[in-house]
Length: 355
Ligand code: GTP
Ligand code: MG
Image (cartoon, rainbow, N blue to C red):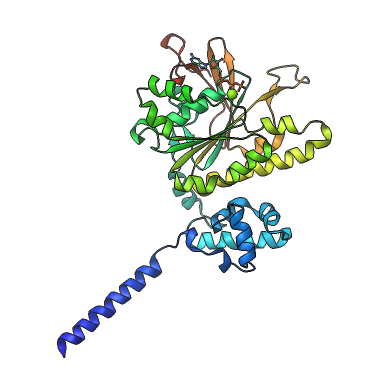
């Protein structure tokens, strides 16, 4: 009798441990079925899946107005669904609670990763590099180095951690047809890296118009998860909107669409812990009598969504980068150059930081 009891006890212990493991293991967002959410039937779930909303995280990233459009629901019902998705994500520890202590936020900030720009001066300006979970905007006139910087970041993000990279891949959303794979090859070679490996680490999405750009961005979540993406570039973010929405009559719609696209980018950065970098052009403001009359396009909508804004301008052979807007960086300028390495520190004689 004794051995049987012992065996039984062992089995029940095993079952209990298995049960405990099951209970304590955190579910992933994929394991929460969309149909288990209140109000979502099989037809709605299918509509959502057809539009690329496959998980509760996708629901939270897309937001109420887009969910309303996909499902045909009114905004109130869509908002309730997105809030339910958010609550589920908080429960499984995938998103933070509505009220978080500064200590917890401080801990979370420690998990922010940084991608080197490959240029010490620019890294100093950015307090270590481009941050994940944030949007960094580079704006400036033609030839100021925006596209070169984007190409460089696609190379540096792939480098090992001890060289300032994240050993991860990049997505390059190209709206102006200025992505050049041969430039990636050149920059990789200039930095002593293998060009073939570098090319494999970059995926390009060519956006032919603003609606196409929004479609590509809305599909990013799935791609980021399955391809180890840590950097998403949009070069340039506002160009299609400027070209398509002409005249004052279309301004409200343009700003609304821009706002939605940029917020989708911001939620993607936060939910998937990736760095989002976008470029922006400048326009001249004739009413400025003193100082630089150039200002970034897209108005307040763009200014308020970017976490960090950096203004690039030409200064002879050099380029100047100025931190214009940041929650914690001081406003200051540094020098950099464009060369075979992409963006780089100036040669020794012109090096040094401007105040
Ligand atoms: P727009 O997109 O027109 O608004 O400009 P941008 O800010 O994106 O400019 P971009 O980054 O394309 O910079 C173009 C400049 O980079 C050129 O004028 C060159 O000075 C420089 N450049 C591009 N390729 C090379 C290169 O291989 N070697 C060197 N030394 N400079 C380069
Ligand atoms: Mg460019």
